[in-house]
Image 1 (cartoon, one colour):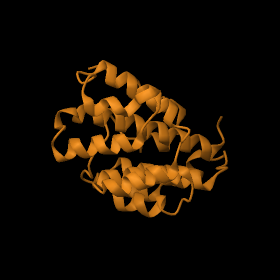
Image 2 (cartoon, one colour):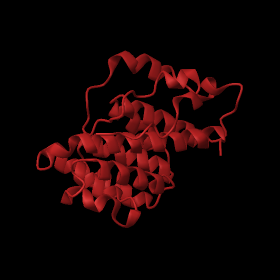
Image 3 (cartoon, rainbow, N blue to C red):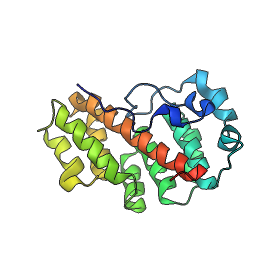
Length: 199
């Protein structure tokens, strides 16, 4: 199955940050095992130091980057501690993903409903639609509702992930992991650009 290229070329990130980015083109759907070899680097990472001499212009977005990095390496508690303190739609987005990953699907749905629309959703809908169309499951009823009307339905994705993880739609796991990876990369890019003031 063809996978789309990274939503953000790694070369646009500073080297310190590139070393912390997840590799591959799939993201865990469940909690996953923490990548212990990454813990010290994640704990030491500070976006302001990484981008110097540029300045961080939005501390909430810088913190959102940290929440995303911890989550990408399966440190859900560390990610949660950060995201629940960010009282913005973007903080709620990371918070919702974390609850989806830990298997608290109703709480994930609550946070996705609370954040409402997000600027990442339109691009994510297009990417998810491409992935679905190129997959062997384009006609599967479980994926149809994800991008209905070319709008991203985050709660429908929570339902799909639950169905994959709990078994009824386990065959859709590769597609789900690819969509989750695109979601992570697009949201992380949005946070990074917001933190450093890129348009």
